[in-house]
Length: 126
Image (cartoon, rainbow, N blue to C red; front, side):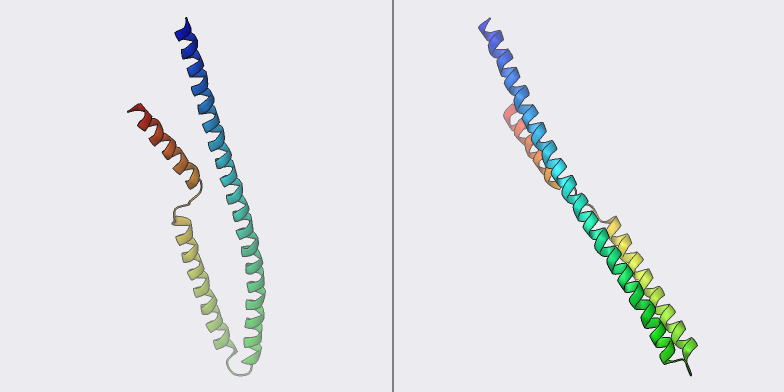
């Protein structure tokens, strides 16, 4: 009978340890998720502010240049500015495509910790 109690106690300790490991990993995962969400919100806020400000600045620059060349070359100025902004938009879309296609580092710390746990468990088996 003492061996059964010893085995049960050992199993309870093992289950407790596994539960603590899982809880720690879940907390780490939740922290990473919260940090990434905050980072994304900050990026969106600054991107929105920049887009609005730059849009207003571009409109004012276009109006200024067209008024500046009103008498002689207003259509040429308007055409060149249109091409300039179209190229800027295309380059921005290409940059966005590049960012979206790159791999994300979300949950990398949690995955590394889980891999270490996996290695340690298999090292103990051998």
